[in-house]
Amino acid sequence: MSKKISNIAGIIFIIILLLIFVLSKVKRNSNTNEIYFYAIDSIYEYSYDPSNKYTVNVYIREDIKTNELSFEIGSDNNKQKLSIDNLSLTKIGSSKYNGSNYIIYALDFYLLNSLYEKNCSLYIDYLENIYKLKIGSFVVRVPKEENRNDLYTLLEGHYTYYEDALVLCGLSFRPSEDISVTSFNLGDDVKVILNDVSELNDNLNSSVIDIEYDYDKEAFGSFLFKDNVTYYLPLSYKKLAYFYKTNIYINDTYYLDGIRYLITPRELNDYQSFLHKGEIWN
Image 1 (cartoon, rainbow, N blue to C red):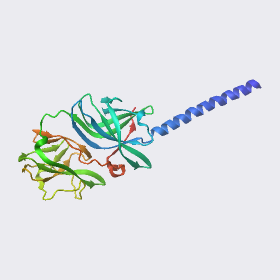
Image 2: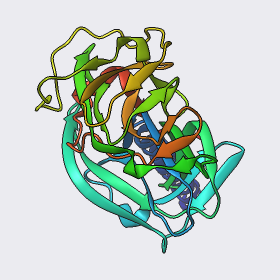
Image 3: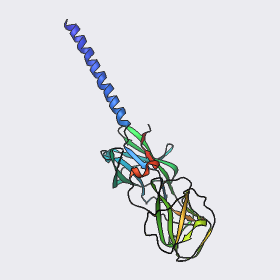
Image 4: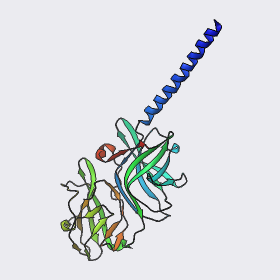
């Protein structure tokens, strides 16, 4: 009789172990389906210098301890590890989305080499998984052109709402000398529509303006910019995305270091058509 009881107890013990195992797997799988990370599809471009820090923005759910995360950046076949001693996460805001609170972080880091990725991702190691989070176009290269940051006395960006998202639609630009321009590009994918450039009698005082915007209008033509005259430069995109910063290339001859045009933290609800979510990669 005692042997039979012992066998039953053994079976019950095995069943309990199996239940614990199954429940832990279910819990783990449910956790991995949660959205821990978001990014807004963005355009980033920097000039390469090993002593410079580079920045991308990432949204991390507020209950996640950032010291439990590690990062790589690049593509599936070309990643650079961002070691713990050369990166920092700085809180720049917060955003509520789909019932969860997310902290907006500026991820600042050094790179060992230049990096050119038109479809770039962060690879985030968390909870025994690697999450792939697309961030947009990320280009860090050594410009071939001459630097001419003395070419302007005013350079400001202006945004407008397009399909409920803030997009960089144009620039206010005041040159410091006369210049004849046949190409005026912000990185590879954004161009000034030179045939639509206009003089500004008054400065645009707001970074957000209300205009009808055609983001993929063909960019062509040429323009003669006059010294100390302020112009409005409308922009054309190959692919619409949030504009973080790029260098400006003029006539394929010289460039201006890119500036941050809008530094206000972005709400995820305002960029739903641009959102990327972190998904398990491994």
